[in-house]
Length: 279
Image 1 (cartoon, rainbow, N blue to C red):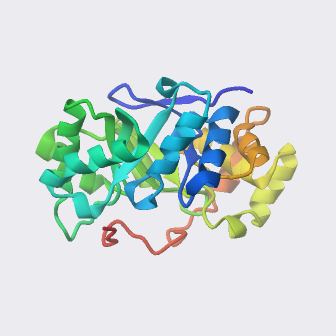
Image 2 (image 1 turned 90 degrees about the horizontal axis):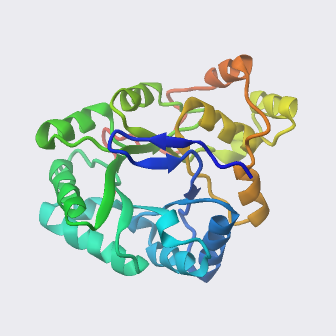
């Protein structure tokens, strides 16, 4: 199976264009599903403190035959740990839960702007990175203005910005900003409201044209716009299908039709970074 293309950030971080999301993937069954994903070919795992499954991630890594150094592990700092003196301990606890010596990528999960602490949380991640606990640092759900605040205060630009991104909510402004600053845009909820999106007439027509599934068509769209997507599936066959995207390519007309699906109200949930708070 052909490997996904690699995205590179300004700091040298390289991520495969397709990773594996683990939201709500928990326990022994979850560990088996994640280990299956690793054995199928996924090398990027995405978790968060608030997913309450970092232990599951660690167990899956130990179950898999894939060497630790070949796996890229991402976790995320919740709002309740934004105070500078809490950041280092939060990262240490993530490592303890996963049984790892370092995390490849650690993100601030949400800016929580009304709290006004995301800059000091960023400084805490910078220092944890300097201490060797983290290899690379980034953000999640940050708008360009939030990132400018980080850059102005610390001189350090995130390597990754993980945001909701799918054909119904294409985040063109953020993707352009990230590209201009060497930031990898990573898509959470890459299939959006999946039940709705997988029945969309345009997507189904494009999928039928290429002999692909609707899911493959959406993930191929992500590959071609240049982001990193992190689909989730507990089914080994679907895990393989989600990586098998290289025997077809969306043409200019396909991409144009997909671009017209964008909608400023297309969020999967009412989570706007300008006011959403997650502790």
